[in-house]
Image: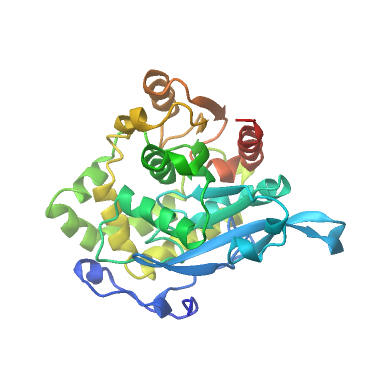
Length: 351
């Protein structure tokens, strides 16, 4: 039985230290808008090691009623697709960032599908429509294991891997520990270089006092920031984005803060357990030099600064290809066409 995502449950920040397990019928549905980064709201659930995981598996489908246009078809597993019996599926697994869930990749789905790629998206634990278990520490290992669990659940072996922001950190750990399952890797503004952490970030992750500060002030501070700043740290060019789309992102983020069970615990645990300020340079030597890697950076990125990234890759990962796009951290929102062009060109290149 899959979760009923229409069930409503209010969960307070007071649950942060508890051990109550979130049941499959307690996963909520976020607000839905026709003006949204989230183009696809349907999906499937898989019961993985630490809870229910919401995923979307899209295969190319020729729509005979629309002039034979190739469109994404949502399937539960690869065996349901008629294309799978004709040719080997080229699966692109996408890993999202810290705040926005799998919808971050929705602008890339149609271009990938048109080029005969199968697209697998899922929400990390604690985000979107997936479970938010409060008995685990939200480490890179936990998130990586979730991705591998899902691939195993779907009987998918080798993949093209795309990681955005925090998802880029998970992708880096994937490449360092399971390179045999990867064909190529792409990082979009990946959170793998050492970056400065604001004072508030350092305070809320301090032992003992940090959990106290976040428990009593975290929700209010996050709500105020998302309502007043409207992701100005992520978006550099609002002129390229429908304001209603930003409105929807604000409402979806507020929904997670206010209504998603254990979201605040998951968010705080992620900040405490993933050392973004240290980066993942120590993993670079473990990644095979034969694995093709593309990094796409926003030249105006305030979250993962462009200059820091360029210098880090030149010094520690010189065989990696680096491309730049004139935008901030929200690459797929600001410049979806440029990003998809660079991505598909790289994926198509012969090994």
